[in-house]
Image (tube, rainbow, N blue to C red):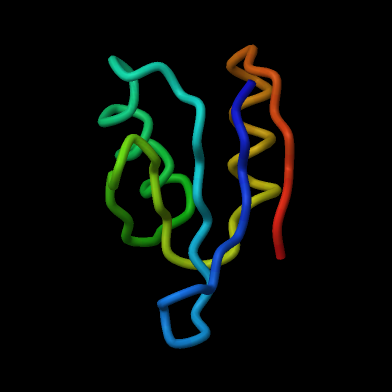
Length: 75
């Protein structure tokens, strides 16, 4: 199961979309794909992909299309 959630903590009130639960071998490639999809910057930190901005629905739709079970959470 892949979890997609928004997070503001420690970011001066700016929202970052965090994706956890992707297989380790796919994280770098998926991070680049999500950044292109959303037209935003991002990074891989601690086994999670962080994309700048609130893009939960867009990323969840892409993950579902790739066959993942997705759970949305957070603000």
